[in-house]
Length: 331
Ligand SMILES: [Fe+2]
Ligand SMILES: [Fe+2]
Image 1 (cartoon, rainbow, N blue to C red):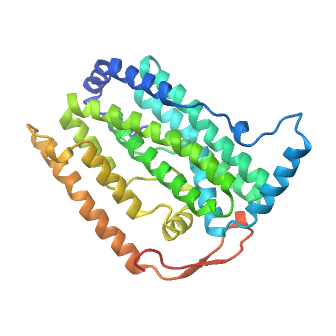
Image 2 (image 1 turned 90 degrees about the vertical axis):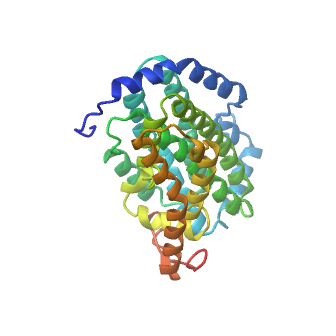
Image 3 (image 1 turned 45 degrees about the horizontal axis):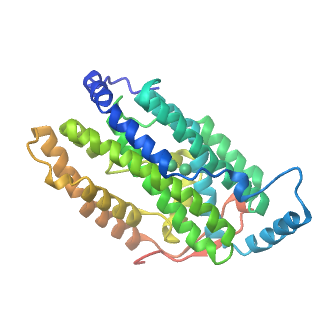
């Protein structure tokens, strides 16, 4: 459920969102014009009339996938689980942005696109025989059943700030996992590249939508961003073993505080946060807080790296096989 604290600005914010809806409709059209709509079976065919050639490709795929290091498998599992959290996100977008009009239309389009991500990744890990599937499925079940209810205080601008950051974060994480997987399994890299291209367009949509809000309701938008950006709760954080899985991603150079710092820097620059003026006291305080963030994140990244030591990891979904990892960047 929503936090019991009501947002006194909600009616005014809804009006702002309504006022920019023609612009949002344009962004949605731009998105439609630029996408290439692929389907999971374009990448991993599974037709009734599959032939011997296709069967041979499946055997070859499994053979190549055997070479994937456990760290890459863990990243793939975490990224798959994150994608499978889609029911939470469809609900949150509907809850914060409403059930009709252009935002609802976007929510449905976006959900349909995102749904293919979990689908194709699951098809891949199943075809490739990468995991103890029941262990992975149990995690997914637990993630969906336990819900995801970030405390956004009924503020739709926080949803837009969150989704801008989150799309870029998932894009980064899929791209880096793909880069590491590619030398063993080019097919997996190709699948991840298709997902990345979607995430990149989603990112542009949310980034520009937030920019439109920032333009007409600057102070409130800054306050929303200042409350979201300092610690982006990744959607899977209530999955058992999530902390260890994200630590594997950090050490592998797939996703961690450094990658988050980079995306924050890029976004602050794109939105020209430091150049916004004529602000209220609340807006100025939010701007200051946001502009301090890169330095804070830099210190956090250094702290995490200085504390880390080489260690071993093991997970149920890879049969509790132990694998060693170095401390990660700087360590
Ligand atoms: Fe996705
Ligand atoms: Fe996305």
